[in-house]
Length: 196
Image (cartoon, rainbow, N blue to C red; front, side, top):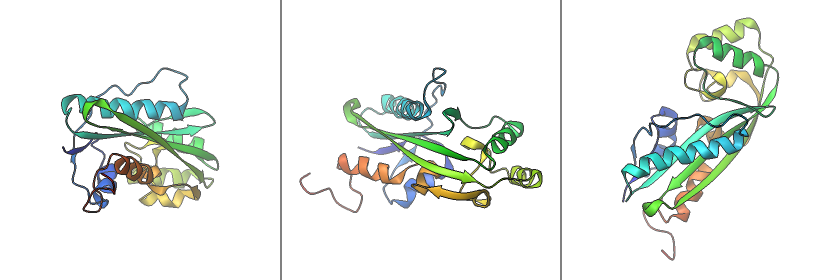
């Protein structure tokens, strides 16, 4: 049995690699739309599950980890901006405000058994000037990131506060991932859990 990450995200790959567990990546190739009005926390759980199950259907004997992330601004979900203008609109909406970032993770095992968890972080942005918004957009870090920012790079300069698991913000909530892998008795430190 192998472990597969249902993602092509460099950030997710780096976070899982740091754990030292062998895995391979495979793009899930799924529709990432959810019904309008779906609460963001519920939506990320659905999307993480959809991604994991899509890859698991192609590898039924393996373990598959899927993840998804949505920004929650007053109950309204913000996903990855389609272009620079959308990223600018998101950053301006977040400027000087606090928001939630929900990251869902789903582990699907052999036989289709699945466990899903959602981790939430709370972030506050400084009030941003026009020059700061444009300078940040020029970095290109907004590409492929919910909310139009990346907290592990130049985006660190945007935030006045971050409460919660930083890896949740980076795209893969490692506290939840470790818990799910341990529950599945997947060896993390060179052996199996006691009793398995």
